[in-house]
Structure formats: structure tokens, C-alpha cells
Length: 141
Image 1 (cartoon, rainbow, N blue to C red):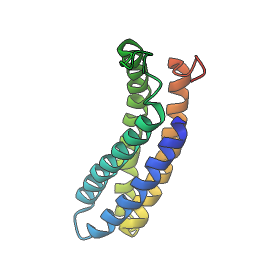
Image 2 (image 1 turned 60 degrees about the vertical axis):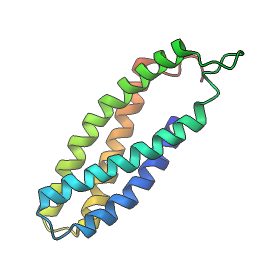
Image 3 (image 1 turned 30 degrees about the vertical axis):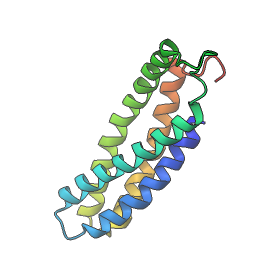
């Protein structure tokens, strides 16, 4: 389910960030890249957070109806660790690739899409390795 949520969030962010990149095509390449990356993150985290919550909202409920804060805290630390490593790699790759594509005169929307796709593939590899290393789903959830 984690990969499904990530892919849906990336689909939303790739679409919106390509539109924003094209709208900002008159800006300097580094500004276009930076603003597009910021929009990308806003859309991605909003979508991913909402989907992750919907998929897991019952996982942390006790029979009394209260939240199992210990289990939630434990899993959040694992998720943040797994996502954090992948996000650093993604951010660096995405920014430099889009900037490079813009400097070699790709259309802004195409530079955004190409850098997004390449960075996403690398991101998914890193996050899947990180999830395995932190054993996030060792209990089958």
C-alpha cells in the first residue's frame, strides 16, 4: 500500500508541477526549478499524507477506541526514517536534473516531467531499500 500511495501522490505532483513549470517558464532556470520543486512537495505530501491516513486510520485503534500511541510513534519513526533518506536523494536529483534540462533548452513542462520521472524511479528504489532495512512491514501490515 505504501508504493500505491506514493505512486498516486507522484501522479498528482507530476501533473501540477509540470503545469507550474510551464507557467514559470519566463523565470530564470534556477527559480523555475526551485518553485516547481516547492509546488511538487506541497502536492505530494498533501496527497500522500491523506492517502496514508485513510489506509491506516484503523491500524492504531485499541478496542477502547483510543489511539495506540506507542505503536503509532514506533511506526512513524520508521516511516520518517525511510522517507527521509529517500526524500534527500529525490530533492537533490530532481533539482539538478530539472535545472540541467532547462539549461539545455528543454521546454519547462518537459524538463519538469523528465526530472520527476527519473527522480521518482531512484526515489522508489531508495525507499524500498530503506523500508526493508528498517523492517517497517516485518509484522505483515
